[in-house]
Image (cartoon, rainbow, N blue to C red; front, side, top):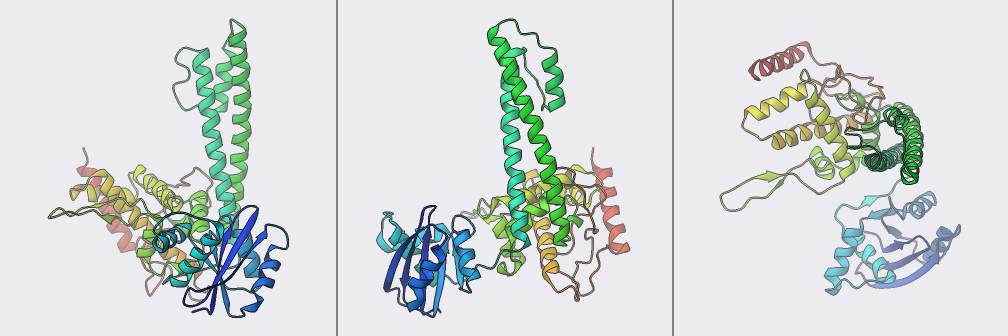
Length: 406
């Protein structure tokens, strides 16, 4: 345990720090402006406590820059989730009144009493993937917004508007056929033309960002793209959010983090499990897209697994949750194998994915020639390709399932 724990409540314009001892006794506090010398000012103030540990609230969010500056200076920095600090504040005082010094103290207490604090490390290639993954996600949202506005304007120009998902080419073709009959209609047509130009610009930016993502994923050397339905976009989202795989400990904690581990909601003699709404939604959404892609292809082992769960009496949502958990376990196994030294490969045996899916297709990044998932943990004799016996068994199962379907 650190002799002194320094909690930091970061803001855009200022940072507040509070130091506490092993018994949570306050030792001092300071507030510095968010300027170029912010880290130097904090280090000069904390020089009185050589055995110190820093706890930054939201070290991957608003406090990222300060946390990285402290790590670069050789300091030990812990990441404290805002929810943990809020719980400490509530339990300590019985109310939710807050101020910056109190928040910094709560951050320090939360880090001091945490059983498994998360240490902040210097940014690596996963930070690059996270940056471009966020850019791709933001561009997709912006395109959806522009497309919805274009739909709304077209509905005012043409009866029924455009009934399907619109593309830039379809919008341009539709605008050519519109003959406005008045000043209001002409204004709407001009507005639709501007939305169409925005749509073309966003489409070009999305294509460029997708290519950048593909290059970044390839440079990372990951094998996640060998899993059926996991392309560069999904792989970047998972890698960027997962970061250091060792912080999970096992596949169950990884599943709890991405939301694929079901939660029990039993009462009395009724024991059921439902979808977990906890954890990080971004890798959970990426896993969901991979699962939907696998179900979409009737020949995939993922579809065979899904149909088998339906035959066991599970509902469609329950079968989908089972499939997502299998994919989560396969992803964790690959993350662990990729993090292992290159001299000791530890790929999963069994029906694992084939390497080298560098396709840049869709958000799911699917490819019908890829396999589903391997064993949840690496086997003693790794292999990227599935054994012939296991491959024939999977194909036979898929064939039987297709014959049973109406």
